Image (cartoon, rainbow, N blue to C red; front, side):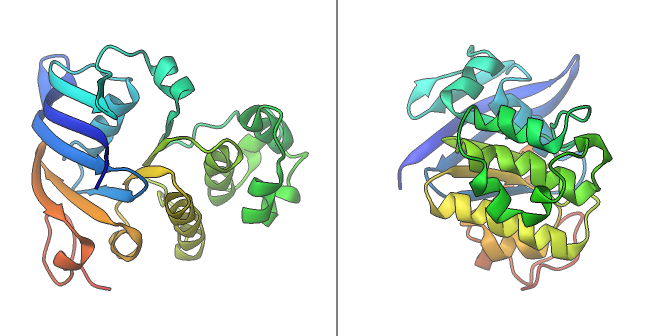
Length: 229
């Protein structure tokens, strides 16, 4: 197993409040790694640390063996480490077409329109007027149009119907199968266990479990009903 991202002893937080308490974590290259756990466990904080939006107070982050602790967020993004945030990260006052063209950087738009045909019907519509599911499709389109090396996704299923959530998860899983390293935070446990290659369970800023999804099925986890499926 080739490790894409490695965290060792990572501590981070907000002001005087420490949220991550010495996290050790390895993300395999070209796989879908899921971070799950109850609200307040530190999942979104961990993605923010990986994206460079929140500095570490101690510890080390390595990307393919290179320390990136001091690398700015825009440098990480340009190098291929991309975050799709919980609130979707689209340009709401621009049309769907304009959003896609910004994401594509001159590339063909068809990968996004093939994956999400509804977007083709909304090309002239303002992105901010789309439904929640369509906005999430538009946000994920960024990774289809210009596939990153590492894709960080926060709460892809937030507020969405199960049918839409499954469609989005399938697209993300396809990205992982075709070589993109994916780190996914989500509360939709059934879909996480269906698609993830590796699962980390966070609890109160620490890693409570690391292993394959099959090891979690039937177990009660903090903040969840017993994992099934």
